[in-house]
Length: 426
Image (cartoon, rainbow, N blue to C red; front, side, top):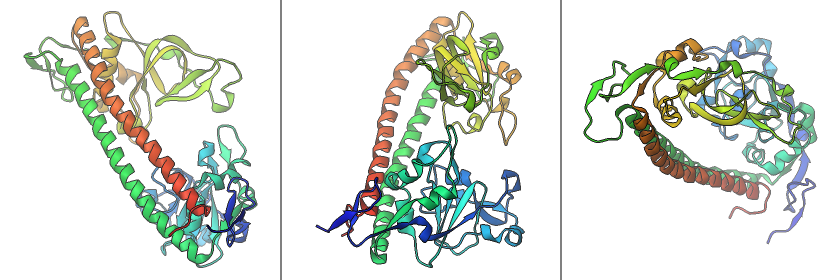
């Protein structure tokens, strides 16, 4: 058993006796990223990383991958040389939309030129030695607690240089730093491999689910049916007794019940709070509502209209507040809610979407979306079938997502135990 001592950092607890606790500012010089906006980015030039890439899900905080890199003009080398990042240094995001992201950073250990971008703080290394151990330490919740206790904000948290200069780090001997970093590289790589395979399986389940829905809402579930050309390229053949109708004849559009409200004005003091919906589902809670009904939502704008990383459709049954980034749809009588929900979720609506940088589904284009419609009885039959099939697939997806949660928790635990010296690399 190695001898331990108090680290002096409440959330880290004891550390090995030969380790040191020092102020972060004693290890780094502090600087600011480029005073630019997204409009200053170009196709090719000098690599830059801004706060958006730091908060990206693909940023592991330890390795800079190509998808995190953007580019700026080389003229910034002359005008803003202090925003270039030295090898073995860090770029921290200076704002975060949640507490969990407070402390997000990237570690730079390459020889090419790299700028820190907008809304960033640079921690320039004072030595010419690897700081990968610290990159792993910075990932731990125990270390970040020092930052989270000091940040200000409600919906947007500010991480200042003053805060970063006030925190401490634990420093093992160089040889042990190297061992810890090498071990965590290997161990985290193993966990990441399992995570990637699990995510791939989830995507396959989602594709299977979409295929089952598409088949059912266009061709039905009864055997031996005659088919006909729908006349719509992205729908293809449909059951011969299905009809094709425009959305405006199937739904009432209730966009008059939408109302945007900024985050700072969303009152949450009431005992009863309601879901606040945007283009991609619930994004907040609020103590009032704009609609009290059984309706479905479809996004009006945003990348998800094309990327479809999140569901396209959302169901509301009761009170909720809907902002101006989602259309509100209520089926007319004679149509089954669940069938229409499945049909819209599965259909390819790319033809109706305008804009590339900011995809948009206008109300006028929404009205003209073509939907295959069977008889009311068959709508209910298909919906019941899909409820059962999709529920089974959703159960499988939920199990895989639970595994992802467990893998993430395990990874955090492994990092914590080794960067704080609770476990020793053999």
